[in-house]
Image (cartoon, rainbow, N blue to C red; front, side, top):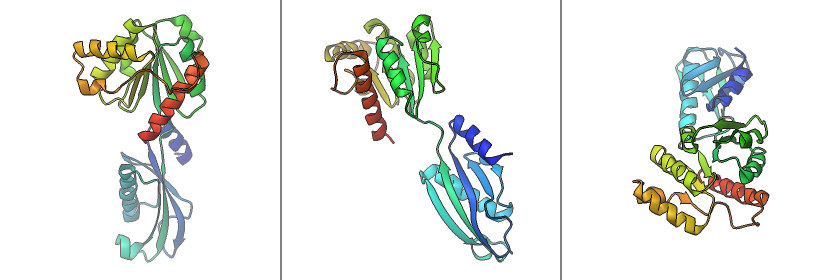
Length: 257
């Protein structure tokens, strides 16, 4: 199997991989310089370093990198002394952690004027965007881009199924009555959500907090609610609001890397 094709396929599936490359060799070793192996949390999925104990040791090192967040490492092993093989050679292996294609996931509830501008802006960045709305006509206005997915539901809150713990969520629906069930279902289903914002004023936030508390949402979870949404920059034009929201999402993403 083509190693590079495998890497691309795994990244598109949001799986981190470690690519191990034979950077140098000396003496009797089981592989050629440039040979590659691809390791995921499931183990070796493509390529080979020649098999045997050195490959097994490389897989252990690669798995440790996936767990430990190390992005790059270089190891030189004497196969007899360090690995326990009868070969008397030496191998230098380069370990490179290749992140998933995009682990920045944004779910936008509502496809109205502000969202139209926001999606177009965010789509230029390395992120994946899911947009939820009840209205086909607004969803159809969104650009057809590789990292943008449109979802039509009978009720906005049904889109909460798209949210994961690392997602950033913004609710820009038709109004307060449709924002509330979205926020309720996200907080109930994914309490560890990375970011949860809703467009509106401080007064709207106070009302939402009171209502969501009546829905049974714990006070600690209500602290997650960001409203007003966006940094305090620009004016009320949809494009300027979009810039302020995108800037806030970038800022919060940086804090959670």
